[in-house]
Length: 466
Image (cartoon, rainbow, N blue to C red):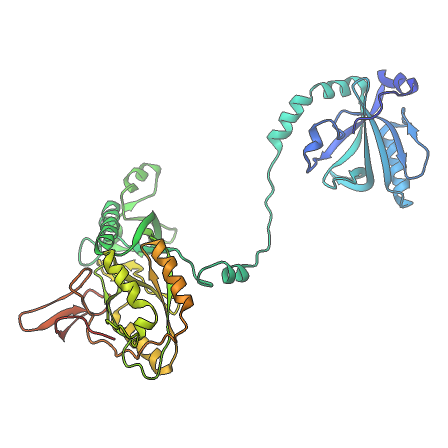
């Protein structure tokens, strides 16, 4: 801090010759370092007071060497408290309360002063002339700019209670709310030697999103990115790819879905540029709990799957007496709201496990969950008398909030019936259906994500109930 400007003339008589000056070694962590309240390089030392010893005023015998002997002797006596008074210019004085600490630089050990108010700030002593100190003090602005150019941010680590945060802050403990679909580039021939370009993959992602929204799936676009996947390539596949061996080849990679590198062992490494489409429900996900009663024989609703791979509730039994599990859980009311809004009641999770489509293969098949295995799992819930926990993609925040309140206020036990495994993927005649019936009454229906996995099933008009 600035001190009293009065000072003895005795100390000023030495200004023409050598003086003991301050040398800043480590910067302060506080903003006061450059506002004049802290010691700065070039300040002239006028007075030292070590522990309870008398004041020592300039000129200092033998300069820096003599002061170092004093500091060494005091440190050995465990007298490390020191007060330093310096002069800046003609009549400005600043004082520092510090402690004496050993310091090693360039293999030489010396003693320096570390501020008791800021342990990060340390200064040492150096022999200079009065003129050199004046020049340093006069170049304060340039020294600030120099210090700014040399200043570097230091990285660090902070421990974080991940398990606690994931358990307490996420809507579904330990499960993210981020939804995405990974699209691999489509093979342009049967043996997959060549792949369509990046624009084709982006167009397919765009078409999938638009078709999903048009069918009534309540999702919105969030982001899209390319994702590099490594693979081995050889033979004709390698010769058909762009070799990214030089800068001149980079211009050819802008729209390539597959390009290759050759490593030191002569094996070609391929980089496949997939596309990841990020999307989100319009109004979040809402939990639905269906509790099982021993007397239940049916859940009271039917499930189907859209062409884009979304599983949804395609029908709910009309039940004015709330005897069906779907009615007791509030699923019927939510379904009727979806119909009025021309939206699909898409199931996003079953027992907190995501059941949304997640990948598109090079052949164009969408990896998703089939309704048969889902029906079997629901059936096992009924036999075990375990409640079923579903999450539904919502299209309206007001409807979601209202349904959550209604669900919490229900006092009736919510119980789904046992679910008979479905023999077909049920398809309502509204939106999002798949498959169809031929003239003989049989239906060619897809029951898994594989493109070649088709089965014939007996088909009757309407949906199959569970």
